[in-house]
Length: 340
Image (cartoon, rainbow, N blue to C red; front, side, top):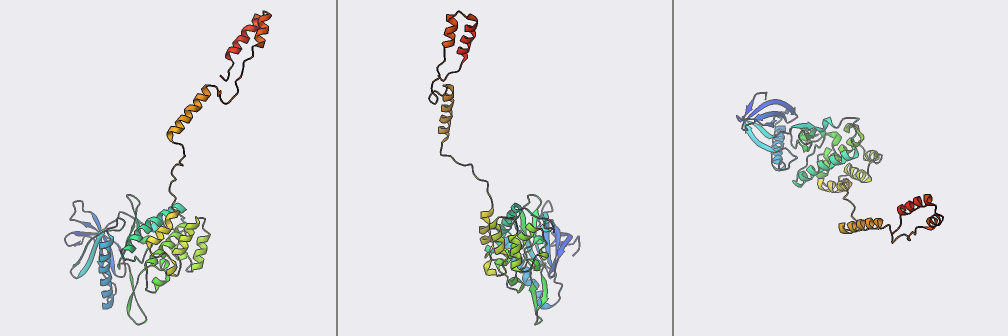
């Protein structure tokens, strides 16, 4: 397809925005809306002309449409608008997210703080928890398939289907589908047996990437070396534990799905502590304060022994008629504070 082409007399292609072994992706305008809203059009166009390859591509493309029709109910997954066939070609149309992929945020040498990483993991796991509850495995969780919306910074998980997948041929000459990105792919997924916990492995790699600033392909493909990197990170021990389980090469040792991983992560999320409560009610505090003021005003009479003023010097001055000395002494006695 080219810019300017119109599908179903409705979707006008603007530009190409991606492609893969099974198809191409375009940005389009939906003329059925007054504001010509933007949308994403995916076109099934297998590069391999082998009939079996085309059959696999068609099956996966339909599966993506079915998947998006369910998952699009989540507010952090693009909604499916349409799935149709035109002139023997298959297309699906989905919501366009105004934003950027996290490729720009996961740059080598750029380290995230502990809080930024935990917040990111929590938000991503909340989406995956929903995906897994729907019986779906994403199989390609990586920065390029995670978008951050411009309007509010929320994350979106994209690309649940076959458009960016690759087709290979096994030893018997049969076409097989390789789904995923090697740097984020656990052993069982590489052998064609992905599980929900396979997505959790990918999330763990993302967490290590964020905290270390290393590229995914630069991380070791060895479980013990990965865990050594985690143990050396200056982060909370609970986060170390969560990441360590996520990247276990044995899928049974990982968290089973997004929900289980999220539950393990939640204790590490520090919430503002409520003000410390005291046993005194507001009335008791008020009465205590008023009582203190009264005591001060009364000279703390009940706490200190009464202080008696001395009139001896004044008596001597008066008896000797030393009026010049008697006057200031009288003034001093009048101004002298007492405990009464």
